Length: 234
Image 1 (cartoon, rainbow, N blue to C red):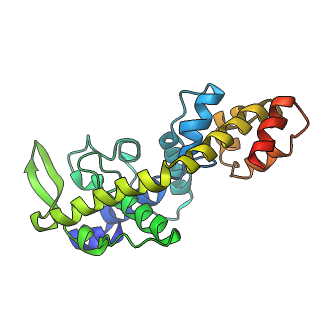
Image 2: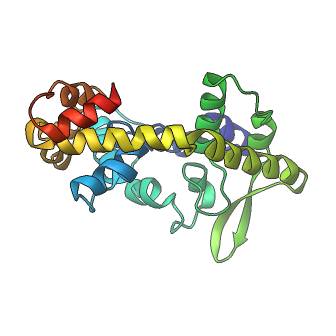
């Protein structure tokens, strides 16, 4: 985010706001991140959970603890929940781009996950991020975030590699099976570990981590259904 702001010559207070929003963008993810939202919550019958709401609440708590912040957090909810798509300055799309699919969040996890997996996706992110431009007075907005034309091949490659990561890593059968097992264990153990209750309250939610799975596995012998699924997990 800081590199994009420097490339676009964004003034300091707005740049600090954009970097802050980028850092806080995913703070509201619970244990096991998207696995919780897509697999666990439906199993627990929770359909009104939105990690962006928790991201905003945590971000506001952090902001309140800053000494003399040099930027305001007006529109924080719009930036974190909608990528700023309803704001007149399209630069906020760099945080979570609802327009054309590349932002600093995606750039971060694509680079980090591929490195941890030992895969060189050849993303050339420095060039891609440097190709961001702000076009003035487009579609009734002060500025719209776009890409230089010469970066379109890099952009297409980024999209292809993101699809590859989802197809071969994030949603491949082994990963999906693992997610289903995690969801089933947490569901069967919920009456003992009170996960659904803890997820609904901000203060208990912020204390949760992936260790909640260890809590669930420690409930073995509490029920036959729980025993069977824990045996599968082990």
